Image 1 (spheres, rainbow, N blue to C red):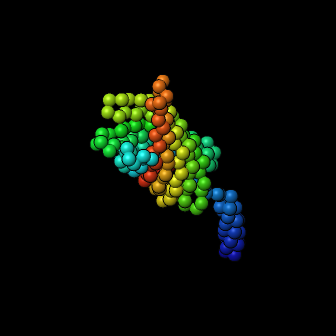
Image 2 (image 1 turned 180 degrees about the vertical axis):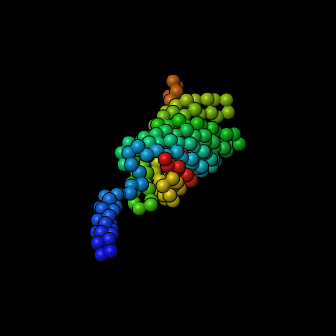
Image 3 (image 1 turned 90 degrees about the vertical axis):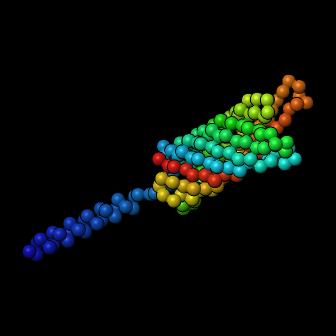
Length: 184
């Protein structure tokens, strides 16, 4: 009986020492190379020229993959509209390739993005396809390993270049978003 108790005591001590060694090697990271996420944004669009355009709105879908623990690549597609002072509507559909770097602090994630691509722009009877740039910064709170919720602020820069250079124009529209990301 004493041998059985001694054996069980030794077994328990050895097992607990082994288990502690495994636990001490485990490190939790919010994002790692190979992680992916899909996101949905709903935004308020604020034009740089309020004398021409009123406040508008937008919706965006995106998909990103982490190349390293902090650097990710992906893309976004959105639909944006702004009403003009004359009650017409300016629409644009940006299709952006995005690169991002994300800082992690506890359950908070702070991504910085730079998007480059093009957008289909439409106003009354004129349609234009042109370059679109969008720098963006945000803050997310990771509620679980699957979801994070946050806010983003970005700026669409959309130059329009014509043969007659007097018609050239650069649209600048600020974008304030509520965002949900699903991590997988």
